Image 1: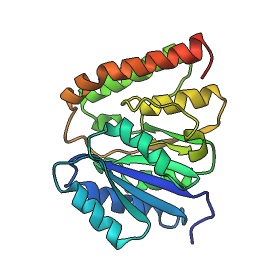
Image 2 (image 1 turned 180 degrees about the horizontal axis):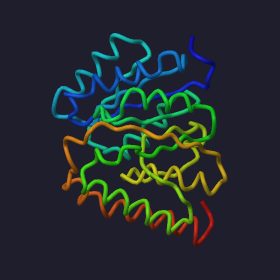
Image 3 (image 1 turned 90 degrees about the vertical axis):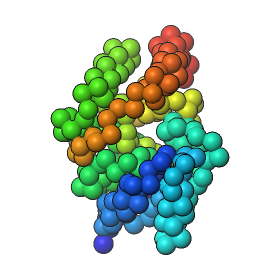
Length: 236
């Protein structure tokens, strides 16, 4: 029997993830089993051009705790995250990409952390599985944020778990910096957090250089806005 923990909304996003979406959702369900009994899974098809939307609908038909949502235009991860907060009906919120990159055991560890703090942050325990370019970009991002904001966080990306009521108080730009836009303001408010090491599967796709270039300036703008509001004006 699942230990009594706060309820959880798990959001699985998919943009052209027909090969991995179903596995991602089933992995989340398996990881929730015996850990959290009160949960919902929201599958967001981010205007995919493959069968991701149809797969999301099939999963929703077979389980009343699963909802499928379809974006008419692509919002990217940050936009889906922002949208999912308004849809979430449970006490805590977690967003997972539909690429099946996180092991089921690590997901279970993450879900076991729900309720221990206001946020559950992660770091990748097996760094060697990531593409070198992705590792360099990530490490540079972490170093920059820790210098700018004075924290010693190991990783500023997801999946993270956050209290839903706190998420609803945060101003998000919908950029790829959405995790940083969540974590940093809450740390400034002295909200509590725990850290969960995560095991990722081997990065087979490699970095999407077009996406990195396309989203670079929106991420920079989001971070500069955070710095201005938190470090300069102190208003956020």
